[in-house]
Length: 170
Image 1 (cartoon, one colour):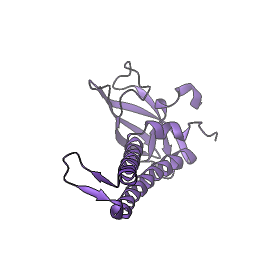
Image 2 (cartoon, helix red, strand yellow):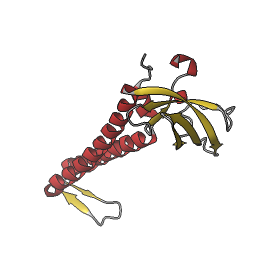
Image 3 (cartoon, one colour):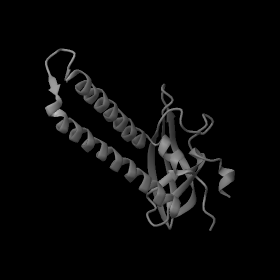
Image 4 (cartoon, helix red, strand yellow):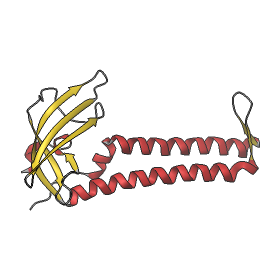
């Protein structure tokens, strides 16, 4: 069976959980640079209210706190990577049917769909971030949708139509 060509980094770039982990990681990094830079340059870091002061002696604690948060974020990103990589490695393309498709003002898409695999019907829901995906406003309840599933764990899925046109899967 020919493997479908979907770039895993494209999936991670548009996956909401991955974006949250990357955002928190970058935020922690910027705060660390700002606070530690202030300590190095000015000898301490004072909050805007002037209440909390951090000095060089506090630097190991600040660094370890930020490193712990960074490691948690990296573990989260790696977990998402492994999840999607497993689906792409053990993939089977199935046809699904959209049960409910709704949009909100911020272009967020909520989709409920079902698919059939190995004599079992799976019903899934996915909340999709606005603007990152290619679900047409013309899609309606009852429309067909292409879904890549992990043949070993059929509950794991990627909505293939979000990343490629259906023609590239045949």
